[in-house]
Length: 209
Image 1 (spheres, rainbow, N blue to C red):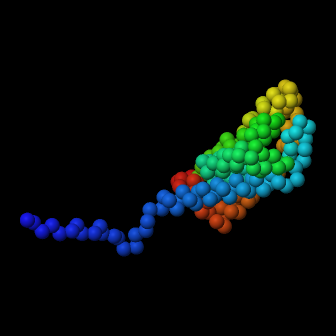
Image 2: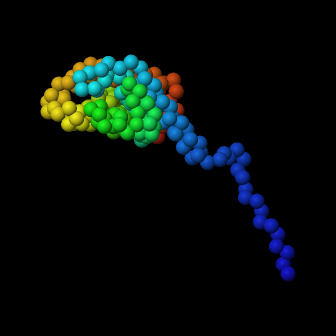
Image 3: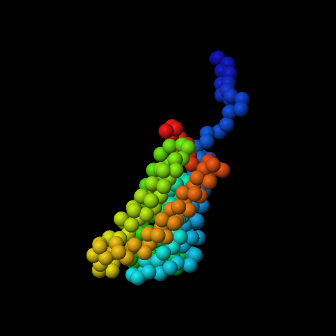
């Protein structure tokens, strides 16, 4: 019989650390949850009602920030998480609305448009590192305003029996406030990128341009 010695233990490189994937995933989920909470909190602040039941709120500011700070996938994911909580019945949208009924009114298209809106904001804003001011401005305006309007106005027009021209005229009341929110989002994004660049992992993974 042969005396079989036990296999030597696998060598461990000094200073080696455990794979970073689990901690990265947990960090990403926490960041998405944080921005979902931010958008929800902004929805609890007083809203300005407009004709047709589509209020002016600060929630689009949170959507712009989610995309600009977290990038396209995590930014959109934070809004998906928010909508899942709303669909489950939590009153996280403007005026404390929640449940599936929140997605059946004239403002439903705008709320659902936050998902592609945040994605476009992140895609353009975080196209390179360091961030470029012109990209951040373009991303917040195209994604945070135009994409959201493009999703929201057809639903609004259908729910209220309006033409697209009439819906567009009504939405002109939103434009000054949304442009102001875009300016605030741009300023906050670049301030955060300088002070704490960790959340901008999508941009930092791309080559400098």
